[in-house]
Length: 485
Image (cartoon, rainbow, N blue to C red; front, side, top):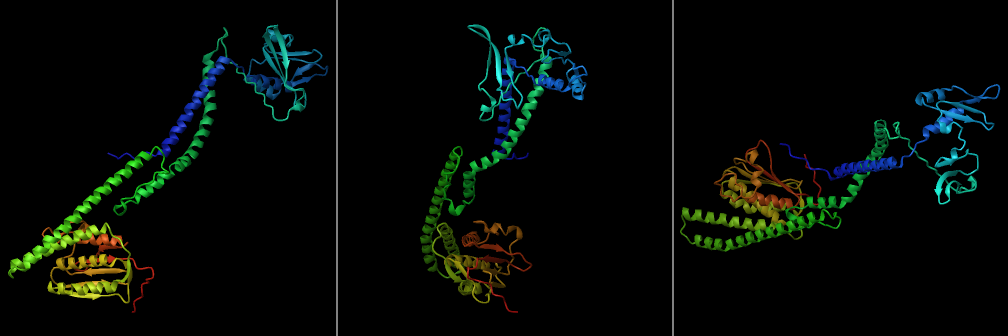
């Protein structure tokens, strides 16, 4: 079963905004269609074009009579509108008519102004006479004709004047009702033609602008998420800022901060318990050691002292582990060679007593590192103690320091299998169940190395035994020296 992918808020908003805009446009066009249906407007674009086409085809013969030339435009117009009719009359009363002229227009328009509701009067572009409107109105004085305009001359217009006169003529049945069988498909196609470009433009605009708007709106949330990703065990007391977080997401951030606070309190309680327990163990362990030393010298008493020493070492490691959580103080500039030489000298008696030879291989010159000396000494001591305990009881234990800030401990024991080389750094994990170790030494060493921006790892190679390397960053002023041939 595939795990569902999280949805992108940005693209969810884009899709929903586009759908919302399309729905609003459909509703708007539906309302517009309803208004047009109720108002019964008429579209006179075809009629105006007919007048222009007929006017361009008019001419006079040799006797000065009106004639109609069969131009290409007129032929195409007749094919599109086979019911074309017209009446042409000049100033001398000469008339030319074609087609099935309705009776109301048969007189060329005489008396027509008295029966129309309204008409728009316009003039040629260079004619300065103003456009006017004529309407026949039913008033208290009876039915009157009104001719009106808002200006005396077109040169009085100080800007742009726009006159819109939109009329739509619907196909009708012989009884005067609308023929929806013809009108319906045309209205659908007209709606799609009008709606589609608007939807495309608005959708493209939404697609381009919405991601930027969403990113800008969620910038504070992104910054908060970056701060949350930096939270780890060392700075668990950090609280995420809520100043720039969107109001809808602020409750989630507050809940996360409260969860962090609860986790921090629980972690501190656990640490205090472990620290107190380790401190409390030190007193009875010291009493046991004192009493064991008073026992008669025999194999059993030596085993008892060894067990007490192991218990004391475990209590000390628990204390050291808790100290890491409160590590503070300034780092000191120390020479890694001198530090390793001192520890090697301190562990030399234990190493020889356990049956090993001890070798120290320092780098040429000093290797300055900025560390907390006591913590690094604890790391090296744990590594040497592990080598003594798990090195097989024979061979050579080597302490090596190079000029790159690395310190290695080599033994010639059975080694650690490759598949176990990461697990041995887990707390309380022991490679061999009956081992006398507590399983905290390597974990403590790795944590201290991490606090110093360093690493610790078990090296791969064809050698016998275990080679473990502590890598510390060199001090800023340190420069590796080239070795001589």
